[in-house]
Image (cartoon, rainbow, N blue to C red; front, top):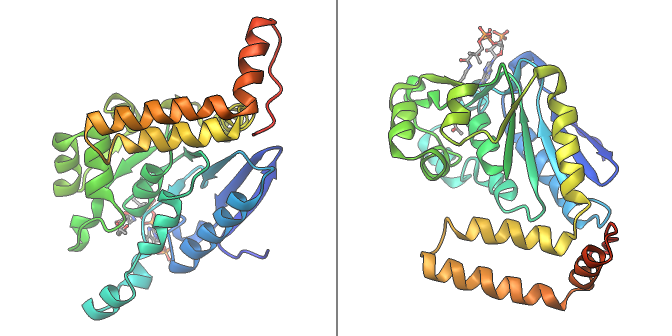
Length: 257
Ligand code: CAA
């Protein structure tokens, strides 16, 4: 597949998507959204892939939706094309995703990171929702996923003032899972993804689904969902193998079934 705005590679069982619009700080164009979602669909259907890393450049993970592309739109065009809705293809991707963020993750860039399961950030990363400075608001989940991730106080602060947050603050408030030196960022994300990708894929996918369920349903329903999923995993060969390997003091050989 030929992509113009992203680079797509595989490293063992890990898919790597690199945003590649360096002249515009990886601004997220409609074409880039479509290419990312297409690449993810291919990774979803590829049984050899167990996790995906999304990254940008050292300067910018992504500086938001492409302002120059959006500038001329009117309300009817934005509404009828349901502008940015296709990014939900990332939100709904079923295998684990890691955002490896260096530099700016602003607006849509921050929102794309929030759609990923784990955010690993370089020590130069900066996050923000500066849409208010452009006369609009976040449109890819910033007000919703950010509020669920870091709470109302910080979300209001970022969305209403447009200020940027450095990586230490982002880690303190729970947006970032780990901070690493910029030079190690992609390797660390790939190592983490590789570790996940070598566990049992059904268990990994259900762990992801179960954690995400916590943001959708009341606690009692979430707990019941988790317990039933836990029970169902006793139907897999990988459960037998994982527990047998523990008892026999050896490494498990998961078969993803
Ligand atoms: N869209 C289009 N082009 C962008 C862009 C964006 N989001 N961000 C940066 N660029 C372009 C700049 O226009 C510039 O292009 P030219 O060389 O042709 O002038 C190039 O990238 C380099 O940018 P700067 O010269 O501005 O670089 P800087 O280092 O001085 O500043 C920055 C970097 C702080 C990221 C600054 O570029 C910036 O503030 N960008 C916009 C951030 C923003 O407002 N994002 C939100 C977008 S709206 C959104 O995302 C809506 C949504 O929720 C879906």
